[in-house]
Image 1 (tube, rainbow, N blue to C red):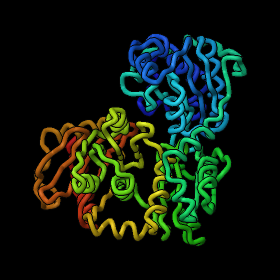
Image 2 (cartoon, rainbow, N blue to C red):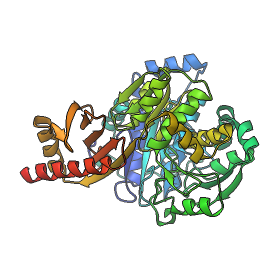
Image 3 (cartoon, one colour):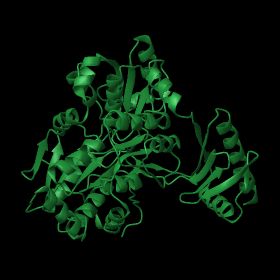
Image 4 (cartoon, helix red, strand yellow):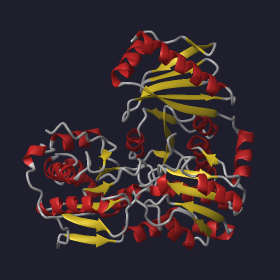
Length: 494
């Protein structure tokens, strides 16, 4: 096993031409091919995949995978390498004709019965980053078992002396128009008729990513008046981090106000997360939007079932669920945990505060495109503005206010802080006693007044993440301030 490449549920990611280079993409592709042929559950002859195919009426004599890319620098070249490796190993490939959003690839894997899909992407990272994601046959990002198996199969760099001449044009590789197929599917799960009738005016911002054409193509079917920015391709992403957060959506916000649009919609580079701008130009956080979309699914679509959310996602989701006598399951941070629950078919909605939403009868993973279109459907069927929707919503439910920050620390210091919190956690925060401590993922201090504060180490960076939520606007800032004091005190003792 090579230990210089770490392959997680978020895939492999790093700086272009440094860690993400032709050799490492080749090595990872070899490892994925090995996983396809040898894994006894997720592989081509695996128990899980065979059962999956039988349930869907598929029967393949040889494995096939889907290969797609985002719009980043060298993504196409890296995809060429993956295609060549798979073909050389006897695996057929369907390569996306256009840049392929991650949720579209997940839908295509389910729709066509592929053993999996490779997406060359670094999701919402900066322009100098790229990477590779593996989507397993169940239509979701690789779980821990899958990533561990792939990682152990990565050949050492010393075993790759000379890369072969790459050029994926081969009879075992066919190009496929997944975009048009997905848009056709989207018309079956979103109320196109209602959106047409509403005559909405919408701003779109693909952020030079894979939402390009998907947004426009679908909204033109819906008869929406479109105002667009950042379409096309720019490997520098206009100089912004393409993460559909407030800073990146500044121009969209101004356009929505200037042109008096009903809303603005955006997705990060590979469309697994989304951003919504209200008619006043204000970015609506996922923690604000998720409970309202859940109410829409229950009230308008008549959905009933279980709901799941990560432990740092707003408790307002619980209030909505309680009002409709529905159960909520809390998960650790990481959408993989929500995806596992969505795959059971018992859950109608899953949400994470970082911008991921999953809905029943779609893929089990987060889908930023579907979340954007569901928001427009909500506008259309309600006949109200987003401002009025939220005003009416808060007549029924409490306001919740949240805030999050990240504190950079060395890995050793982070580990020491977490260990000290484990041994001697604070029993009072911001003059309120701690009612319960949830240690599922870091530390979530639930106070007796219902407010909460969470501290956890980032899974990808040397950061301590701090989250706070309260029913008044000032308290989250005070809780964050208390958390910073705790961290600094423990840092000094380390």
